Length: 265
Image 1 (tube, rainbow, N blue to C red):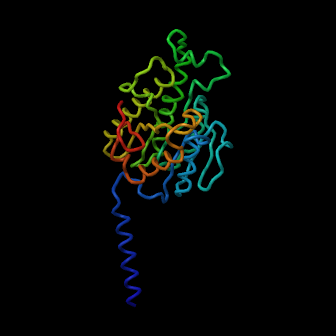
Image 2 (spheres, one colour; image 1 turned 45 degrees about the horizontal axis):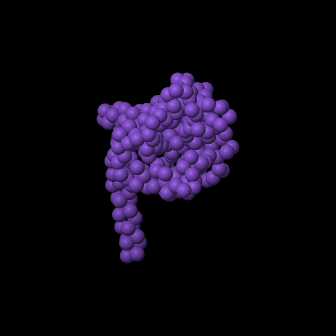
Image 3 (cartoon, one colour; image 1 turned 135 degrees about the horizontal axis):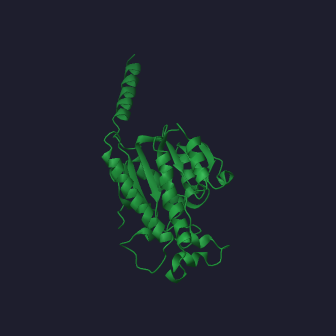
């Protein structure tokens, strides 16, 4: 009888501790879900793997859904952010699906458009400037992700988090190089979008939602090269940690680095 009583007391203590978790903090992965765009390579791939291993329900997107690894707890969706119909289709497919965290990781780099001679230059130098090409970066890296966020707002939990994977290139205060209107400009725009969204969230007294612009750091990816300081896996682990220990929830509306310092806007 004494043993049973002791076990019962221990169980009650555990339940009490679980119920006392602070609001706005995803302190446990049990029942939590995350939407990760661009989940087939680089940081996106690492995020999908990291959250899957941690027991999260992962909704992962890529231009080709089959390019995303088949893992436990992972559902794969097709999403090309340059295609309005695919944004609408994803939002419709996820209707009534609870989402706790949205990570806007998918991005468009003009430098990758090697099959279009002069395209990158048209987004980098004013003498070659083509507004429609620069606008493509703005749409895919900032405006379409914001539209997707709006379409999924009813899915987002009351303490949900929206994270935009930004870049130091999007910092106006730190800019010390000429040109780069397309990619850098689109990241600066996304930073502004996250700041605006954070203020919208703060005005809503019925929720405790968070919007964050996040500089992942210099990573060993196709863009960062193999001399970079961090692996995508290290960065993904940092992001998961900042979600689960409530760090993001305490820093609504900030431009952050993954080492938990603030980045200059």
